[in-house]
Image 1 (spheres, protein in one colour):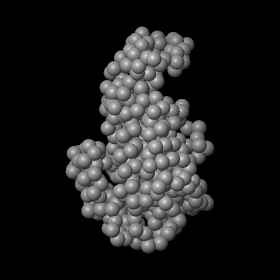
Image 2 (spheres, protein in one colour):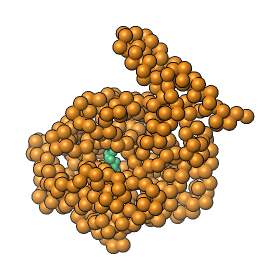
Image 3 (spheres, rainbow, N blue to C red):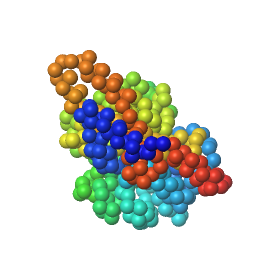
Image 4 (cartoon, protein in one colour):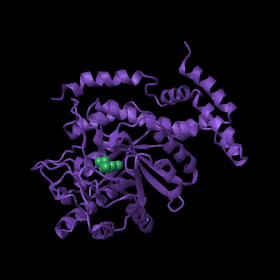
Length: 419
Ligand code: RNT
Ligand code: ZN
């Protein structure tokens, strides 16, 4: 039986024949920290002590697979399991609704004290944190409008929430010594023809400006804004559309967040990176897998993922990417969903790093488009799995399919016992 190291030695030679240094690719992959979304652990439920149920406000997880985390302690146990099964050092991306609340705390009163436990936990694990305002699943989002509501009281409530979240992000970045990315996504929109689109968008601009008024050191926190195409109940009108946030982010020097599920199904998100990066130096990505619509399926190594990760690698030398995940499948083992999606995203990045870019560029610039196409095809058959397994072995996590059994055991011992 050949070992992982022996198989890697052969693979390394094959990549070298194409001018690719696989050791350098592995060293570069180690630098890509992925921001793991907290919300796959419990189907975007959060840990608020809620007084009343709400409509969900534009987010739906489907499925009722047993074993979801019911408390912060269970969630942490699950994240630690996930982190133990993926190579490299990553980050956790928290939503404001995942604080440690002993009593009901409304969104406009959420504070650093509700996240000090998370900061301590992250420090112990040696990971950084990112953060998200939670402008949905709340009675003040039930009308379909939050920051762009025509009700000044509702707008002020959500402006206050975003301000609280920025303060928390700043505290996280300061305590952990790594910039905390604070992302804002709002569900605002309407089911049917809306005649004052201009009015709602003007209100959103004003509310965002008010929310972002306080300046923070970009070493501690940065704001991002995330557009969407449509949601259930906002089919006709989404206030925060792509054009809206593209303009907002560029004029306000905010990060733009591109979610792979938030565009028309035939649109290439990969193609947008180099376009936007003519006018911005960095981008936030929510890697997701839309099936026919924004379905947030678990990320796999499919063509849209590979196209985006290839572009990240090509643009990365002089541009900065913050790579976060955004999927939630409540119908399968949730730890398995995480590990599958994180590994697939990393594999996409690795494929990008192993691409014979110099030879491809040479073919392209000399007008040999057949050679470019053929090389891209030939590369698909190179022993990428051997390089990936080597990475897992180097990072002391299970290679091959070994992690599947780890997750099955964890389910038998831990998650299946949760009522
Ligand atoms: C929803 C957005 C947003 C949320 C999270 C929970 O369409 O993608 O990222 O999924 O904030
Ligand atoms: Zn998203």
